[in-house]
Every structure is written in C-alpha cells, then in structure tokens.
Length: 247
Image (cartoon, rainbow, N blue to C red; front, side):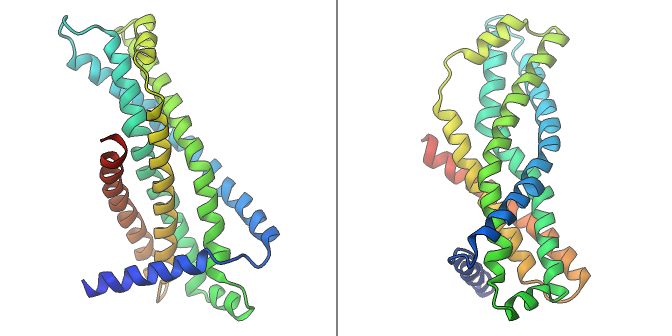
C-alpha cells in the first residue's frame, strides 16, 4: 500500500511538471506535430486492419446466434453498429494502442533516462518532463478520437462485407439495421472514453519510462509495466465511465 501511494505521489508530481508553462511554445508545437505522425498516423494501419476483422466477426457471431426466425435480420446490423460504437472501437483500440504506443513511449523515454539524456536536458535548464511528455499527451488527445472514428467506420464496413458475402444478411437489411434507432450520444460517449484512455496510455507509459533506474534490462521491464498498467487502468475506467455516462 505504501509503495502504491509513493508511486501515485510521484505520478502526480510528474504531471505537475508536465503541465507547467512551456519555455518555448514554438518548439513544443514542432514536437507535437512530430508526435502526431509518430504516435497517431503510424497507428492507422493496425487499427484499420483489426477493426475490419472485428466488425466481420461481430456480424457473423450475431447472425449465427440470432438464427431464430422470430428475430428480424436487420438486428444483425444494429448489433454490429452498437457493439462497435459502444465498446469495441474505443476500448479494444485503446488496448491495442497501449501495446503499440505505450511500450514505444516507455522505451523511448526510458532509454533517454539510462543514457543520461534527460539529465543533460535538466542541466541545460530545460523542463525535461514537459518537453518530452506534454507533446505526446497533446498528440494522442488530438489523434486518438480520429482513430476511434476510423475504427467505427472500418468496423461497420467490415461487418457489412462479411455479412453480405457470407449470405447471412442482405445489404439492404444490414444498412437498415445500421440506421435503425440510432442514438447520436453513443458517438459522444465513445469519444469521451477515447480521451480518457489516450491520457492514461501516454501519461502512465511516460511515467514508467521517466523513472527508470539501471540499464537496458530495466527499460524493457518498464516497457512491459507500461503496457500492463495502462491496460488494467483502461479496463477499470471503462467500467467506471460506462456506469457514469450510460446509467
């Protein structure tokens, strides 16, 4: 318990340093643009591929579990739409990004710590925490909602292709199911969750990397911890946010 409180205190103090006033906003802007490409744009491919197959599987599973003639077939499209928007595109995408982006951030900052690059920044009077971490947080908060929207679109398209090509549902019924009783707030709910998850992934991974002590072996351990802790917190906040936003 004491260890947890100590680590949590260090995390809060790190965030205080991160969100202090930037020395040179122009440099931070340039760094943020770099992180948008490195952490955001480079993740488009994996999110699109996983979302496509995720939508396809949801559609086929829904179809095979609602073969009762009582159920109208358009419910397959409706189930695919709601499952992807409410849960899969925000939460599953966040877990994927925790593995890809989180480990990358932790290893990058951890390597800078063990090679004394962070110490060099501090000696030059640079707020190393803010310079290294703030652009990453801003970049993920800006780009992760775009990734979630992309995931929703690709997932639904994947469901449509899988459903129509396998013959479990006609194109007209699937499209009708997507449009049926649509609640726009579900998109808002998904975006709110995405912003929380983006902050968790970036801040927790940066924290693990920033306080690495030792050598390359410890950097690897910090990278693993970043993925594990981020994933656990994502799942925890998923439950909390669902209760708060949908109850």
